[in-house]
Image 1 (cartoon, helix red, strand yellow):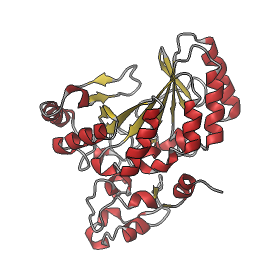
Image 2 (cartoon, helix red, strand yellow):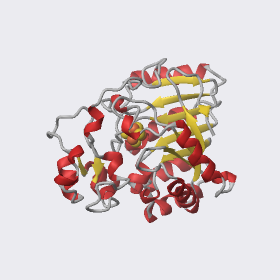
Image 3 (cartoon, helix red, strand yellow):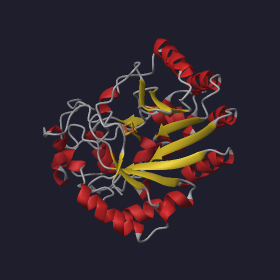
Image 4 (cartoon, protein in one colour):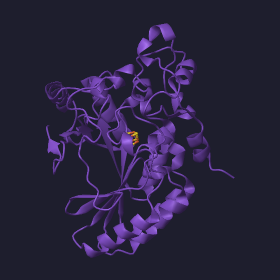
Length: 325
Ligand code: SF4
C-alpha cells in the first residue's frame, strides 16, 4: 500500500488557474497571476494538503506568494541569470566548494516549486545516476579531509526510503564521514514524510545527522510538524532552519521574530536568513542589503542571540558565503 506522504506528494496543483480557484482568488483581483495553462518555464507545484495553509480570498497570503506564478517572472533583468551562484560540478551531481564537505544533489525533484528557487533549472533531474553516485563515493573515499556530506537537491527526502537507505549505507562504509546533513523542505510541506521507516533508517546511522529545514514564514508551521520534529530529536538529530528573505512575504522584523520564536518552540534552531540568489525572474522577491540590515537590527534587539539567524549572501562563483549580519 502506498504510504500517506507519497499519496500527498502526488496529489498537487500544477497551474495558477486551479490554485486560484481552490484559494478563491478572484481573477479581477490579481491580473499578475493570469497566464495560459502550461505556458510557463517552471511549472507551479504545491500539494493540496499544504494549500490548506493558504488563507482563502487573500491574494497577498505569504504562502500563496511563494508558489503562485507571477507575470513579473517573465521580466528580464540585468544581474539576474540562470545560474546565479555559478555552481560547478566536479562529478555530475556533486559540488566540492569547502574543504571538509561535499554537496550532493540527489534529485532535482521537490514537493513544491518555490518561485525564487536558484536551482529551478535542475528540476528535470529525477535522481542521481548510479554511475555518478559510485564515482562520488570513490572520490570521497580518497579525500580524507571530507568529514561531512550534504544531501541536497531538489529535495533529497522526496526519494523513497529504499533509495535513501542505499545512499546512507554506502556512506556508512566511509569511516572519515562524521556528519550527514540533509537540506529539505518537504518536512514542513508534508510532515508525514518523517515516517516510521525513515526514522528507523536514521536510527541506524552511526554518524551525526543534521537536518536543515526551509521555512520562511510562521504560517508554514503546523502541529504535525511539531510531532515529527520531536521524533527526530528523540534520535539525537540536530534540526536547523534556513529562510530566504523575500519581499512582501517575510521582510518585516515582526514576522521574522515570530518565525524564530515559533521555530524554537517546536525544536528548530534558526540558522541562516539568506538574501535572494539572483535567479532570472525573481527580482520582485528581492530585498536590498540595507533594508535587510535594518530588519536584522530590530530582530537582534528583541531576541536572544541563539534565536537570531545569520544574514548571509552568496555571490556568483564566490568561494564562501558572506555573513552580512
Ligand atoms: S524546495 Fe528548495 S530546491 Fe525545491 S524549489 Fe524550493 S527552494 Fe528550490
